[in-house]
Image (cartoon, rainbow, N blue to C red; front, side, top):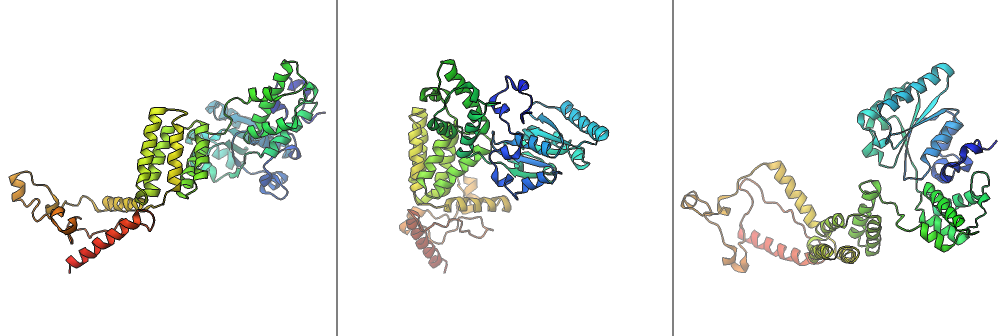
Length: 441
């Protein structure tokens, strides 16, 4: 008997489904979880698995792992998709688990794919049945559970992080499928050169399901042409278009923009360029990127090199005029300039500190001497009285003057760093402070 079940039942099913392993030894990847002595391996070996959340990119084996756990622990495997299922399907799954428990004493593993698609009330609906042992719950998600899942559910399930498959893992999957004559492709009689297998494993971008889908398509293509071997043209035709993982608005999106920002802040133009290209290649809206890049110019470079802000804005303007792909080079120029520029977060820190004072101290009155007096009444009320016009003072500076509200002590929000233009700014502010001190003696 085949480990994969009745061969007739597999006819017409995708290669990725036919090649799904039925033993842990046949499972490829996730060595950090399934290696000897690792936590998930021990949980499976115990025969009494706890509820879990599998968090990882597509094609990393979340569903397969759920089925393996059910098989090893002699549990009924019920699966529902949060994309398609509603209250009716959830109730049916609970009823089935209760029936098996009452009539056969059989335990159930309920696997919920894309669990983050369920809303709060739907997620909460599982809790009583997890707690009373009606079923063991496994939720699979591509999104960060901290943001997408209820705390109540997270507190009852252990999160396991599944990683993208390495190119060596994907190459092993390819070789296994091509050498398998029972459920794989060995009986097709189509050769697949080693160099092209390596190319395919790299192009699949860590996704085991994708690599098998692509493998099946390219073998079908070569077969339809009457070829006995896959060639470079076949593979190039199948791999047309981008295959990099990029989820607009999802976890990968925010991880990559974070990496871009931190590379600019860390003065690594090469890494910054890499992450920029990853996002552009993945389909990120360049306007979103430019908003973030302009922010970087103020937050991380600031007055250490004010040209950075102008260059970022010019890049945005250039992109608006040129579009893609020509305008992308201007964005790259701005990113590399900002990454190479001297760094200062003094403006950012000063802004946050001032905003905190504004929010905590209420609506303090503007001092009379700082108010305009366009009418006679306002002049009679003392508006603008004793105001010192800076340009009439030595060095165009009114030493000792106060520009804060009367009942607020002066603050020193802005602390220029000892880098770039802020060196000069710091020297000037220090000299003005000394003049203030002399005037107030």
